[in-house]
Image (cartoon, rainbow, N blue to C red; front, side, top):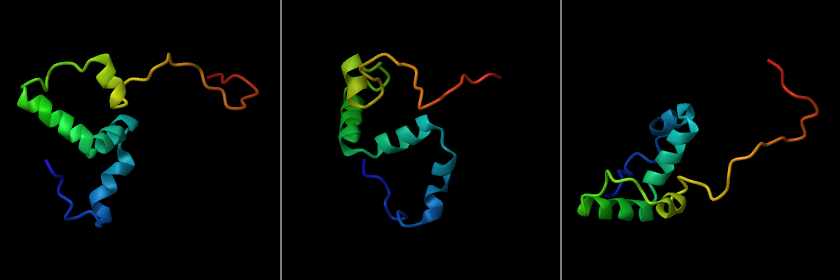
Length: 82
């Protein structure tokens, strides 16, 4: 499950990164992570690749966060009105 690294210095190989949504960028980084590759290989071996991950596994790979989402307000003085 080794990635093809023959073109790793070719900037054009990474142009698509500029247009990825945050989820796509996260996936591109996760799928290159060797521990995740080993975990996925184990899923393939047991034919469990389509089963949902347990919540603990989701948190392990950064697919879920431990707390509730909250509002972020970075020094805003007024509400945004559209």
